[in-house]
Image 1 (cartoon, rainbow, N blue to C red):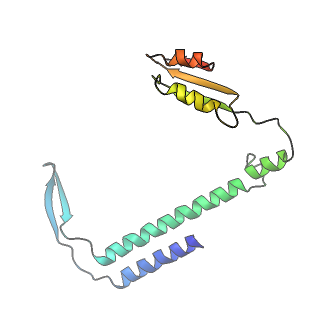
Image 2 (cartoon, rainbow, N blue to C red):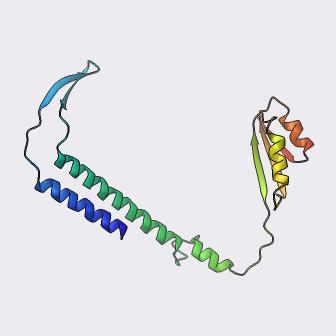
Amino acid sequence: MVILLVAALAGLLIWIAIATADPVEPQTREGLLFGAWRVLYDTEAPSTSTLLIAVGVALLLAAAVALLETRIANRDRRSLDEGDTPLSPRLVMAQTRGVFHGPVTVTVLVPAHNEEATLPATLASLQQQSHRPERVIVVADNCTDRTVELARAAGVEVVETV
């Protein structure tokens, strides 16, 4: 409904702008751009009808994009067609409903580059969570301080990258 209202408003604005338009000749002048290209430009602000047309066209384009996005999202998310959208959440959830796949596990990746000052507090905070992560991996990216040493001392896995 919102998309239809926006499109109707856009159409109304364009209709009003065209109905009230005055055929006025713009005063164009000639100038140089960067001293190389000759350009024509208008020294006056656009007329009200031109602004209304621009707003109307912008609203029409916004309504078209919203309508297209809604159509795509609804078709892909709610599809029951296994041939067209086999990974539709509706299909996947229907196939796995009621099946226990094991407990939920949490793995935390901590990207780190010279985080000697903040890494101990981060790792301590992870261990104080109500559901502690099963694995904590610190990805030490070309560290020149003691980040790797502190991570190993805290008992977490460390992956060093260069």
